[in-house]
Image (cartoon, rainbow, N blue to C red; front, side, top):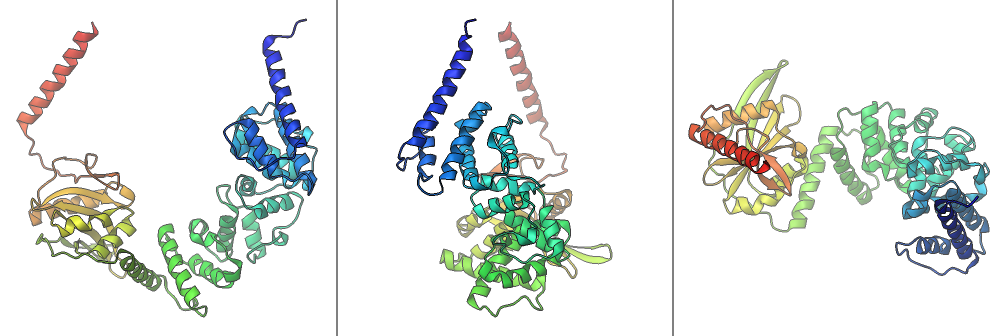
Amino acid sequence: MKTNWKTQNVENRQSSFIQLVERIDRENNKPTRYKRTIETMLLEFFGKTSKKRYTWKRETFKRLLIHLYNQKCYAILRDYYSVEVVHKMSSFGNKIVRNIEDWKQEGFEKEEQLKSLIQHCFAIYETPAFLESSFFRSDKKHMLWYIQIGRGKSIKELSQMPVQLTSKMAHEFRNAPAFFEANQALRYAQALGFGASTETAKTIGFSRLSIIRESEEEFWVTVVQFFAKQKGLVKNEVDQIIDYLTYKYREDQSFSMKSRTLNALVNQTREWHRNVYKAEIGEVLTWKPSGIKPLYVEEVEEGKKVIYKTVELLNSVELYEEGNEMHHCVAEYDDDCKDKACTIFSLQRQVEGEQMKRMVTIEVGLPEREILQVQAKYNEEPDKKSAELIDLWMTNAKIKKPKAVSYGGPVNAVGGEVLNTVHTQSSEYDTGEVIKAVFWILYFIFKVILFSR
């Protein structure tokens, strides 16, 4: 029977690919850069694999490529980063625990297929899912950890372990969530071992503490221990504290975490960042108050006095601090404030005995005294309480209401992010404008119907 032409084409392609791999493997490869072709991609990776030293790496790479092709994993072999994973696997070709050619294609996604192949080649015993992803990154030490665990080695016996783990920490490391990287999982496990809640441990894991320097670990483990006792940690705040602690420890290695409190550390961190910012910008711009009456409201919540107030920001550093904590680009408005084009207020909440909390940032246009922008943290919409307070402030301070009537309407942009306007509960609608809008809507509907006939 005559072979179907489609089958012939597939066989020819397979044969061509295998011939290409065999030919490149036989050659004395020179360093080659990938130029978006399969041939240059293979030339680059074979060029990084010696024919004289550790020849099993080159042989493993070739076998993996050919077997992937025979298993019809074409998407992997067309993708540079997937082939890079295969090349990393070949670096441990002398530690493979099963015959490569016994692996069968599983799944349809490239990553799913590669993880299945990694498990087949290196894992006899159950391994942490997050370590499987190490082959998609660059640290070969973490790939080796996966292989060692896959062969039955205990967590505490892993090669080049940069931190000391208790039995509880080792257990938590093995069972860390799949979304962590290896060093993040280490800090997460350490934090749990020191008694942190799961949420606090995750915050510590994702923080800059995951950058582990063995020469400084004696100090940083005390920092992990300190944070593990805290509640309600925020990653951005933790990272800023770590920047400050890095500076202090490298300035004076007798610096320690003994007798420190989180509130004091936060204040010291803010002062240090403020001074760093001053040094960076050179000139700190200042301007006079706008004369707009600030908001001041006292309430009692759960038996505690709570103060809500608006604070006018009057220099570059105060704008920087607002933007840094609220995660938006209000710091760039210092020139506008200096030129009296606008002024910036921070709506703040102060609970008795607790730290001040910033609620929203408000831009008021001058000299019209009209609110132009209102934005909560991370460019989110202000909550209901903020809206009520701003409505009250506008009335008492005689600030013009914005043209839009809901938080959803874009008014202006800061750093490419659209900020929202303040909600007012006024019923002062312009009837004439509403009638005009309805008329034009009906007109365009009529035109669409007419032209569609």
